[in-house]
Length: 360
Image 1 (cartoon, rainbow, N blue to C red):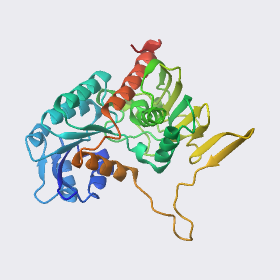
Image 2 (cartoon, rainbow, N blue to C red):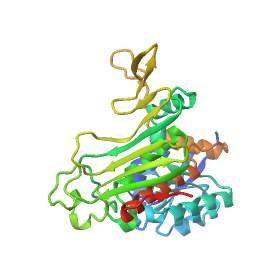
Image 3 (spheres, rainbow, N blue to C red):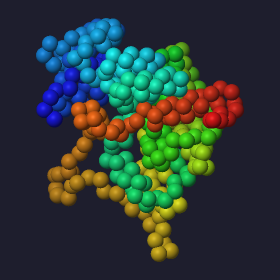
Image 4 (tube, rainbow, N blue to C red):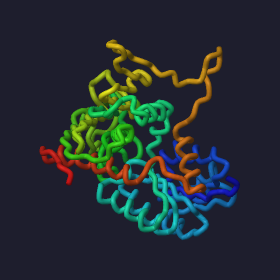
């Protein structure tokens, strides 16, 4: 790959500076030429740190999209703007990497899928946990058939006390929800991908807003303001698939538990099982005896050297850039991300109505 891919960033807040910009800056074939944010100073700071020579700064994303030299756009805004900006970017002849979750609602997500099909441009969603070494290994195990038919799984995104207190995370109108749509989406995406099963049949869900009302609460990022905490603090879903497989999804920012874990899954199949609770562990039965293997993912073996490590966010960015430059297949397909959003929305609807939600 010799030519440079010209990239524009829409939304220069935490996720752009924490993941997208540092990752893209490590790829020689990329030059970040445009930065947009409703707070101009934020876009300017990002441009000064990560921008190519002559990089432009915008406060209106539509002006950025008018630049026909930009081939790729990364959408890093609050959830409520994902669909609008993504559709406009696709229609402006740009390939799009949109940060997770795909959209605030399933209807918005469907518009994104339709726009990608209509325009023929590439669209992917930022589920970088698929690129972790343990995830990549487990995907190979599952594809090889070592687990057999996976008929029960758990998707886990449980924090004891780690409520994000910055940005718009606590704003239901902007985000569409709390931990379920924020981190539960990663765990569900990972689980569905491992199972290669995207046909839900029914969903039963509950959400809770119990601990978010506490004053001066212990929290990783300092106490939250209960008046601004308008989303759930925990949410749980029971998902059945068309083939009878069952998934339990659990998510929380604040929960009185010592069993925590984020973006991990447990798989139970007819031939074996796997979990990510203490590293990557595989289990099964051989010669009438049970076994458990813990996979060594580091490449070490000598003192003072732990082997090469790969940042999932950088692997995600490079895989995405390669797909655009070489017209390769996407790892995270928009149709898959749509199903994740549909299930999340069904959990919220079930929690609101107290009834199960059935898919056609």
